[in-house]
Image (cartoon, rainbow, N blue to C red):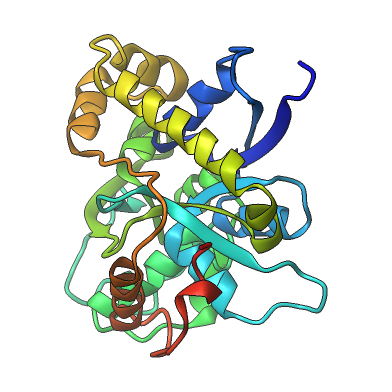
Length: 290
């Protein structure tokens, strides 16, 4: 193992990250690196903090949460984060979860309390997107931090919150247990997941990151061509084979660098239209690792 670089990568334990998880389980000694996967229950806000605090080297997280972390000034001493590449390109389907006995009307979303894993997380930012779509004013007082997926399901079930947004295939196995139902979806109008690091780490390890991404793309090809892969979705995440197959038919993994100015401009424009950021003029190098 001499000369092999250990790389710590963090992300949520969900099917979107299967290529990274499988690569971390591959102990092929011919690789020039050893990937250590660290699962985080708290989502993007926890992952950006882990990058700032040097707990991990890379993170797969929600694009909008990463960009918000970059654009909003941090305390002195915090590291500069950068978007390395998009991990997933097709929209993420955020299911809108409520209690199964709720009656939904046109006025339903007014003054409702949202369970969010963390302020600044995807469940929080997509609540803003949903309210913007429904033309309902946003209020910080209507956001309840719950820490995790389980926390969100429990909060709605126990009437501490009214609505919880999370990826539809992840939550589907738990709806009966928590007496919840999905009343629709909110789609991210940008590539939902990105790979990130600190600017310092990227500049010092660019060739290593490119090597890792090449291996991730090989894992993606293997997954896409494996006719038995749905069994892993059932075993790892309790996702039924037919749901796994439907998801696999639409997933568009990417992991190509560099990110183009055109794509970045589109992401920022859609975040502005969704009410997440004020219109900004910012150089590519302030967001994307180049």
